[in-house]
Image 1 (tube, helix red, strand yellow):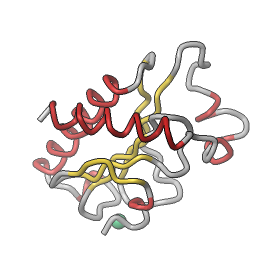
Image 2 (cartoon, protein in one colour; image 1 turned 180 degrees about the vertical axis):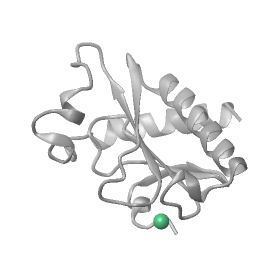
Image 3 (cartoon, protein in one colour; image 1 turned 90 degrees about the horizontal axis):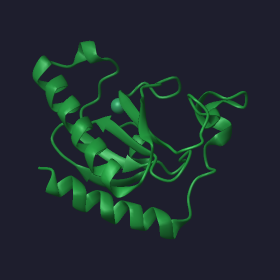
Image 4 (cartoon, protein in one colour; image 1 turned 90 degrees about the vertical axis):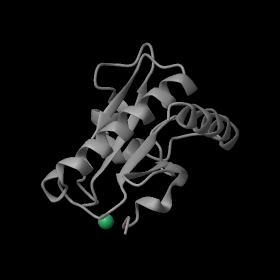
Length: 137
Ligand SMILES: [Zn+2]
């Protein structure tokens, strides 16, 4: 159903989306929000489903912003390698270049994947995130 998006560590889910940390994260706080049902484009979703998905995306962003200090969080829809509709949420830290090189740099997206995170920091982020997400319901 989620193709191979669920390879990540699932943090939370609801009827619209499954939210996980990326196992090949670009950096700490890298989250993937994927539609629960298989869809490859917004055109395959009803307006109600889009509303639920985007509301969930907002809820995830609020929870992530509270869980990890960051200048802001980039929201990317890439879908180059995996057709299943999903978003990458990647914190931008103070001092990062515009459109961070960890995303759009010369070395490209895939080379910075797996640079990510110590398990301890990831676990701490995950627990804060889950608490914030539930609180935002
Ligand atoms: Zn799928």
